[in-house]
Amino acid sequence: MSNSIVELEHISRRIRTRIVENSHNTGMPHLGSCLSCVDILTALYFEIMEIDPEHHRHGTRDRFVMSKGHGAPALYQILAMRGFFPYADLVESDHKGGGVFGEHPPTPDHLPGIEAATGSLGHGLPIATGMMLACRLDAQKNKAFVLLGDGECNEGSIWEAAMFAGAQKLENLVVIIDYNKWQATDRSHDIMALDPLPEKWRAFGWSTYEIDGNDMTQVVDALRNVPDKTGRPVAIIAHTVKGKGISFMEDDNNWHYRIPTAEEVIAAKRELKVET
Ligand SMILES: Cc1ncc(C[n+]2csc(CCOP(=O)(O)OP(=O)(O)O)c2C)c(N)n1
Ligand SMILES: [Mg+2]
Image 1: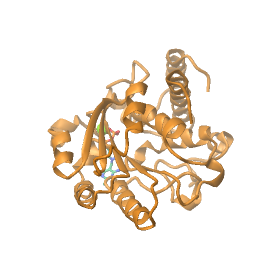
Image 2: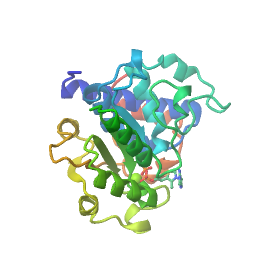
Image 3: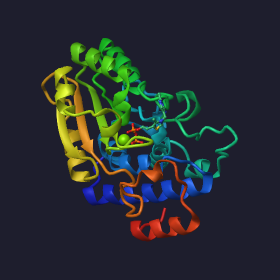
Image 4: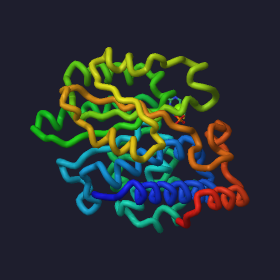
């Protein structure tokens, strides 16, 4: 696609508005986690990825795996706006009664655009690594983009997959780390420090880039640059702000679980300055 940065930023604000409204209406948690990665998802789905919502299982499509599966509410909004299913399905669904729009992504055959059922942290990267190995065996050039949380990088399975992908030189595999410096209950650094993070990925055979993951220009530029001709998989360390875009949610980890009141939804929409 060829959206300008201003258009992409506008889409991001609309997505943030819908996420906040949806959380209030359905009781869906993980607002801060969703708001932190919206700009990355917008860039991927509205500018970077080769996808066709009309033929969403096409074999040579690019893949996106939401490894931090609790970011599903953001992914649902992106998929609806991109045309994978009607927005009305999402708004009118019964979230509490076992519908497809749960706190974590369902299996792919239940919702167009979902590539993997995630939610147990640490599994999205191993799954995407297998996908890209299979695509290479089929001589396909498509890419897989995987969104990891920084807390999620505490999981051992992430590093086993990283070591395998580096050794195999899976150059069409791209990891984006949503580095918002928080996990569910505390600062990531205080639970299990990740630093030096770029050096760790490089030691496992990856190219690394560091960006501001809430700056649309930097996000698009980094994603346009893959594969990066080194033959290595790419890890983009995206520094983000949990709760980004709404002043009273930014960097306040209470919004990992909190649900906004009707008044807070109005205040958030006033800041975002867009309707859904
Ligand atoms: C294996 C596993 N352990 C624990 C959880 C519970 N959990 C859900 S979100 C979360 C925090 C994850 O932090 P991070 O990856 O940094 O994501 P953020 O919310 O900051 O975007 C945890 C521990 C889980 N989903 N899976
Ligand atoms: Mg985090």
